[in-house]
Length: 224
Image: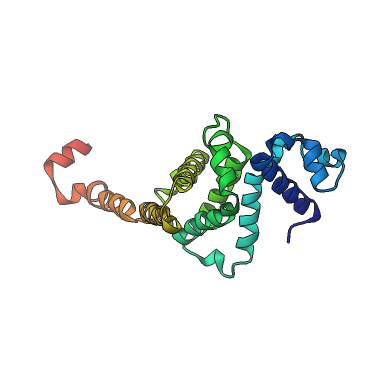
């Protein structure tokens, strides 16, 4: 369950989003505080300014995801594909009530920022946690997949999926669901395949360990 401060911050974000979308002239720190019946000084205990309240919405979506995951029995035993899919679909469910707000702010606040947003850093941590908890990734691929730069790339790709979802007018967002299924399936297959490892083992055994034994003149002279 969220703590009292977290609940209050969520309420402030909810009010701020409503004012931003429907009563922009009242989108001010004192008005946000007044709607929640707290003083402006109390508002500043939680946020520096009204813009930070809007940014909090995005970061809090990750907090809500983590709270939901803790309630899923056996989540730790889920496959890599299931964990990534669950993250994306659960985030869509969390986003949905504020889709209109995201349509207006996602590009400027998240997608097109040069410096990573707090939301991006939180998404990167989610992908890192998923990677750290999974043992099915190929040993050859794992150093690449668990590199900090990879987490940044994963986050940016996730943002492109969100952008696609925000523009998806298909029934129940079927186009987005199909895209997610195909992308996640492809990614999981690519990082879990043991073909590179087996190919390396075969090369080592046949060429390096046994080339001199099987007496292939060309290879023998080449490796010498």
